[in-house]
Amino acid sequence: MIVSIISVGNELLNGDTLNSNAACLGQRLADLGLAVHHETCVPDDHAAIADALLTALATSTVVLTIGGLGPTRDDLTRTA
Image (cartoon, rainbow, N blue to C red; front, side, top):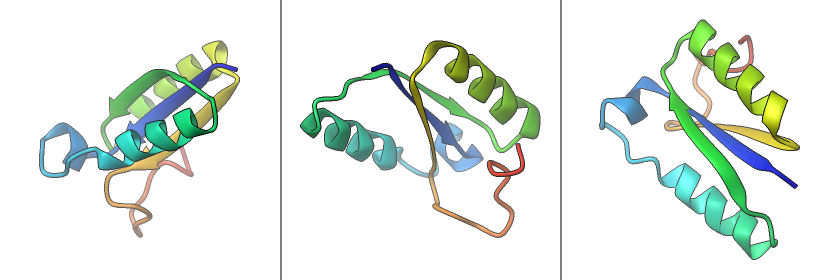
């Protein structure tokens, strides 16, 4: 199984928030015997999110999207 994680958030890219969600998720998946083959971080931008999703879906069995702040009212991931 090929697992990819897409982290979404300007706060992750500009260093305001440490991407501890990706680290935690990677550890949990490893505990289940699953290895993350690819992790990428993109800004809060529809085109960037969609591009990352299309790339990951082309190469992965499972694609997980996460954010730095969790769900927010202005979250773009679902609509992208």
